[in-house]
Image (cartoon, rainbow, N blue to C red; front, side, top):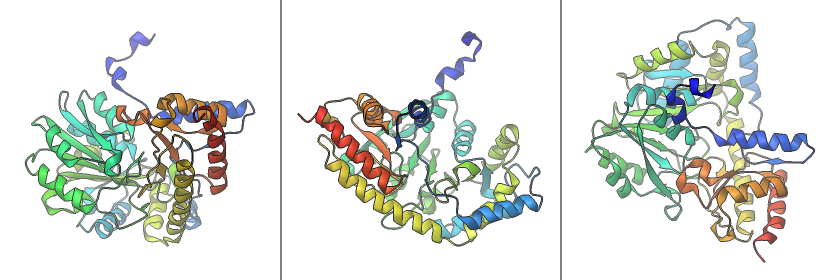
Length: 392
C-alpha cells in the first residue's frame, strides 16, 4: 500500500540516532551489554526545582489549552531571558513556544521556503535541517564544515554559494555533531556578506548556547544589521535536561510570528501548559545545576578526546561546545558506517556514522559524551581492544 503515500514523503529524511538506539536496544534485549554514546540527551535528571514547579503547576490546574504562541507570562520570561543573554531587545510578541525545538525549524522552513528556493545548510550537521528543506521541495545547498578550520565552514565558500535563489541560511553554534563554535569574528564576516543578499533569512540554532567550554556565546541576532532577518531556535532539552518535557521556543521577526503561530494552531494547538509554567522556573530560578552539568561535561570531554586520540587510526579535535566529539577515522581503513556497525556489534558501544549528518561526514564518527565517566572509559577500552583489527 506504499503507493498510496503522497509523493512528498519520499523527500523526508530521518534522524538516524533513534534508529541506532533501536538497534542497540534490540541487542540489549538479546543479553548484550551496550554503552549508549549515540543519543544526544543529557544523562542528568531535570533539576529538582523545575520538577517541583511542574508538579505544582499540575496541582494548580495548569492542565488546559493555552494560546497557540504560548502563555503570556512564559513568552515574557523567554523574551527577558533572550534579551539578557543575547544583548538584544526582544518583545514577548516575537516569541513562540513549541513542543520541542524541532517544530521551530519545521515551521520556519515551511513558512519561508517555496519549491525551488535554495536553503544553505552546514554539512555535516543536524540532519533535520536538510530533511525538512527537501520535504518542501527546496534545493539543499551543502556548506562544508571543515576539520582544518576547527569544524567551522569557510566564509568565502559561503559567499560563493549564495545566489538570488537563496531563501534561508542555517547556522548552528555550538554545533551538533562537531562541537564547533562560530567566533564573533566569523559571525561578523557572515553578516558583512549577507548585506549583499537582503532577502536571505538566517535560522540560528542555538540549542547548545549554554553548553560552552570557553568564552561567551555570541548570536548572529546581536548584530544590528541582521534586525528582522534572524530566527533564534532554543529550548530547554539540552541546557536543563528536559528532553521529555518537550519545550522549545523560537524568536521570530515580528513580520513572521503570526504565520508561525498559525502553524502552531494547525498542528499542535498549543504547548502543554504545566510544562510552560515549569519553564519559567527553569529560566528564572537557580542555575547551579546547569553550571554543575557543564563542569561534568567538560571532564568527560577531556577524557574522551584523550582516549580517542590514543586509539590507532583515530584523531579527535577538542570540541568547544555541546556534548559531542567527532573523531576522524580515515586512517583505520574503514568507512564510517562500517566502523560504527562494528563498534556496536563487536565492542558493544553505540555511536553514529558521520554520514548520518551529511555526505561530508564520511571519515568521521560521532560519540555523545552525555554518559558517565565510568561508561566513557569502559567504551574507550572496548574500542581500543577492537582497534587491533585495523592496527596490525
